Amino acid sequence: MRDLDTIMTAAPVIPVLVIERVEDAVPIAEALVAGGLPVLEVTLRTPAALDVIRAMKTVAGAIVGAGTALNPAQFEAAVEAGSEFVVSPGLTDALGKTAAGSNVPLLPGVSSAGDIMRALDLGFTRLKFFPAVTSGGIAALKSFSSVFGQVRFCPTGGITLETAPDWLALPAVACVGGTWLVPNGGADPAAITDRARQAAALGPSR
Ligand code: 3PG
Image (cartoon, rainbow, N blue to C red):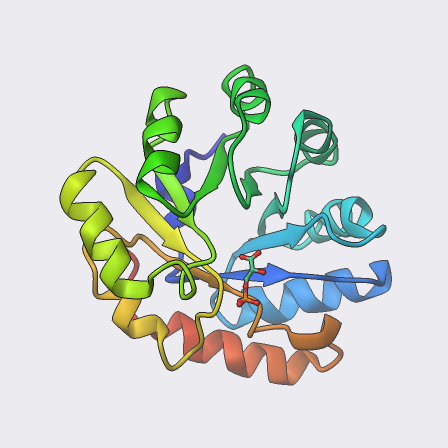
């Protein structure tokens, strides 16, 4: 089982995926891995998501996790489907306790100092900063990291290829996430690989 640091530093960008059709799963995963982005966050926002996770796990080199897990039942369903990590937009006690009892790591979302303090209380130091741009952007993250020196972040929400380098330049940022790599379900594998290459070139992950 990989830990969150390994997952967050495997590439500078985690594609956040919203996929409607199971048949698109393997071509999209292959296109992203070929472009240098092995970590794939499949959001549980579509009825196909769990089958997409199962399908993507057959792609060599892919590290497949679930996103948008809102509660213990979704966390457990994601684990059952073979997710190697789970991401949530926020954190509840119930979700945090469920994750603490699992060997699949949870990357929970935070957007305020109080959120971060609750996450630390529940034992989480690797956090998604979400929604990053509208929650204060880079200035907010710098303030959080000066107070919470032990935390490393994956900011997502409003980040683009153009703005990702500014985030990745912050020492507290391990990686960023975004949907820009596979817009609208992603029908064009060559274009996905092109975007993945550009994202993977944003820098060695730390
Ligand atoms: C997420 O779940 O992290 C967000 O949907 C990503 O937001 P974006 O569409 O602005 O990249």
